[in-house]
Length: 415
Ligand code: PMP
Image (cartoon, rainbow, N blue to C red; front, side, top):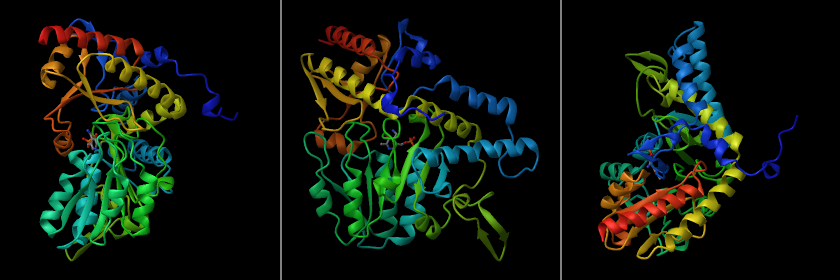
């Protein structure tokens, strides 16, 4: 039987979905939990929790080292996650998918294995003002060791990348460009295809930080036209400590290993070691096998929901939440991009973000406050911190109402 096209599927049934996420039913400080910290980490459906549990109960063994039945099952689970991720991001080949502990490791792998051996004094890496520290600090560390510099393209007051400026900054010294697909603070969606086209014209490889995109939109690395794409599992329903780096084969073949150890070699002699081909060359040591069993389950869950439905639902929720916040006096929203994922950064006039978050927590509302690992972006807006409500497809309008009411109560306490 053919699967129905997503557009013919009925709208998302949020109550049925919520029933799949055990944690959403709990209370916090005797109040029903309103979990709006999804950009920080997402909650897990039962199928993911059970996949991890089943792995330890029934299949636990190390990968690739054993010929016994359990070893084969563990290897099948781990390699099955690679297949699922390759399908999820439309990688041309599963061998171009390196399994990592998350975006931070994925980006550091590119920094130390791709950038470090290539960069020299006078070279530059171009990034943007809206990046997470994970897409800034590794480049600074590599720049320090090579004499290269890190440049940041500006954004406008709406929190959108000024693409013309980014393109002007793609000068011949730039040897790598690194851009987030979606801002973790503002929700801004960057025009990656256009950016990739401009990079390609100039022969500059492009790394895309997909941490905040993968939970919300279908990813097709071939259509995007980038060279490297990093994802992190825990923001897309999967366990913490899982993630991936996709890279074009030509880059992977030219990259030396970053970690040395077991599982990444073909032959080890003291006269010299021959490394395995990608992806195993970059996967030394015992990985988070149970976590990757969860990754495969998470991807199956997201595919079952379908990104058409998920997106329509989340965009409606974002519009509802934005309008509700705007109705409150003294609220300043950061990030007004035309294309946004469901992330709202804001401040209430006269109230400190951390005080607000602490008081909201007492009302059962989990939001993040602080700099969101994006100091340069906070600096751009001239604030030390914001509050951030980040939504997922299992959140509801009733929760948005509860959140807005809680802000009203907190305001009374603070003013
Ligand atoms: N980039 C972005 C845009 C993020 O939001 C995050 C997580 N907050 C990261 C990178 C780092 O991801 P991880 O900590 O899972 O490696």
